[in-house]
Image (cartoon, rainbow, N blue to C red; front, top):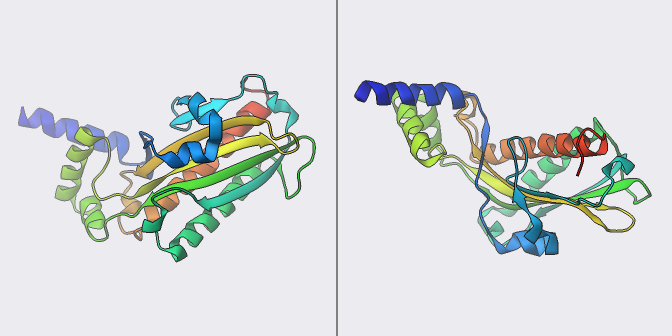
Length: 228
């Protein structure tokens, strides 16, 4: 029995250990509906590779949009006070940069509304800091990492990790019609390269993952590869 448990833990480690972040269940909080408005009640669980909760307007024609007007609002919600203002600014700036770069590879990023332009608004609902020291020990020392893998097998996440939750809303930049919305929560994964990062490193990795996920997801619809 002990051997079987040990082999199971090793298999989980091999399968999940290469990920810098992992999607976890969205945490319900008032900030979601305060930001998204009525469409927050339309959200449904996303498939693998999508936001944890998502909605796409079934009456919209995404193929009309070839430009994006981006607005990273920053921190928004009830738990933002736990993140120091300087770190809020740094994480918001990272989100703006990562999203701009990801979107620019697929769209023309503009600063004024016009026909054929989608406005994308993004907020960080909260961010969690990793536990300094303990995060590094749990990832870098083999015995502790094995225990951490066991914790993952039971709880679905690694111990001492950070992360965060974000929401987005896409609208027609001229008419204001809501085209899509979503909320996602991510925490640190099991990648060894994340062991020695600073306390907000997992939040940074989540932001980078959200940026690429948003750009890819939007393009699947605007390119016509996927229908609403």
